[in-house]
Length: 218
Image 1 (tube, one colour):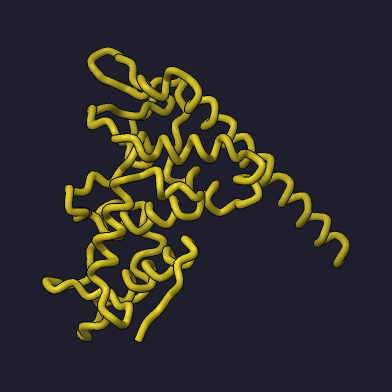
Image 2 (tube, rainbow, N blue to C red; image 1 turned 90 degrees about the horizontal axis):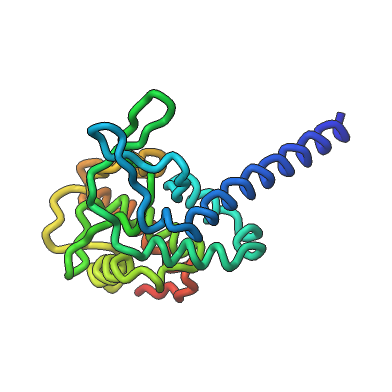
């Protein structure tokens, strides 16, 4: 029984690695191709993503971020991915056609998705923290000036105890993009003022650890 379980586990691990390698290869081919600069085509009256294009998605980047061995084995690809995610995302309106269905391109990452203002204010703080964490995990935060600016702004709002406490906060930040549904919030907001800052404080501490920063508090 134990041997069968170990065999099944090894088989599942090998299958996962094979699929991950296939996804990474498809994204790598996209980043190397002219489609990375011009990923759209016209289809009737609509602008759609080129069917031959396989850009990174929130899911594929999260997968790569969770697989340090893959990052080491494909260091060149990981570096190109980080650089691509630092480019300004096109604001061109388009749709993603999957078979006969037309899907909103919310899960695609065609560059930097945050669009924060020059002071580092992000419209969707949970999304910004999720994206910054992914960049930290693939060692690509330094290639993304917008994400770096947002992180610096959030860190500047932490007090001497390391708790995120912006002066004008009246409620916990609300998630706008659905990609953060699985991890935000981890702590349900209550009437306590501290409940508004728990999630952001935790994520800032996690990002700091991923970046190798010392965590100091009083």
